[in-house]
Length: 253
Image 1 (cartoon, rainbow, N blue to C red):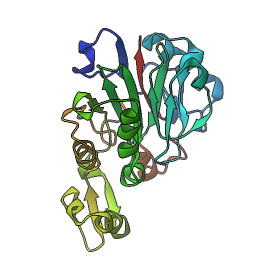
Image 2: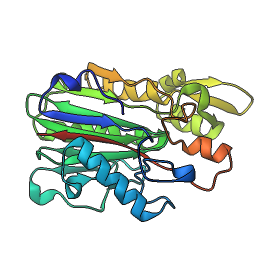
Image 3: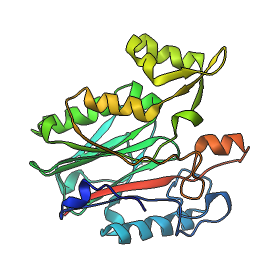
Image 4: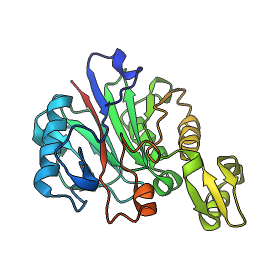
């Protein structure tokens, strides 16, 4: 379990970047796998989600996750009536109290947002595709629609894959350069057609571009720190058939 020093200052905010420890799942999914879309036994995942809801301090039916598709879609909760399960998107922004909003990851970054003035929380799922296609921009703009000032926002970027372990091909490099030549600073060439990509650096740039200055990073590498995190890329490298998903949850009381 990992926490933000910035968010811990607020008595009305409960949050956690959960590790893979202290759950019910077995084998490659051991042990706090929260991905219902994985091949894990459903009863174990449901037990894990119930455990997470207890630790974060909400009813199990009030822990909301998304059907994540690496999109730039943001779901907004303005009232209890908006809160439903099985929503498709990659970010949630909420004014609803006592509802835990969660993001699942296995190398991508989960990002918490909080506006302490207007009492709004949010969380985003940012891999390369979502980040490139504007999930961070759309999340911040959703806050703006709810009258947030970017200068008031706090952003916390959770654990994700480290640059040295994020090897990519030239075609992905080209996608970022085609968007903006300045994105070249987030890549380092390691061969004729290969690069390593600084996902965390790119995410921080995207947040900063919207004049959000209050940013914190949980500097942990999901690829190398197997004890704490699931990793899609590590599982592929080890030729494992599937992988678990860690969960990150924020709740406002």
